[in-house]
Length: 64
Image (cartoon, rainbow, N blue to C red; front, top):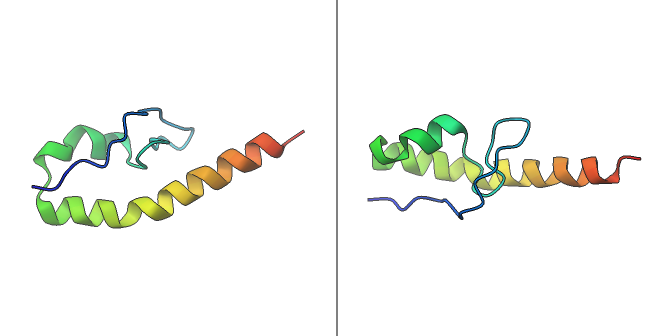
């Protein structure tokens, strides 16, 4: 069984993605029912999502 990517930050941004793990609310809610293949697919997308989240947070912080 694939371990959850949760890092216990659990805060959704304006794009409805968790700023801690990068999952959307549906992925978080349904994680335990996903197949291992589905979990692996989601996990493969998380690094990119987290990079985008961080980039948006930095840009927002730099706004006057």
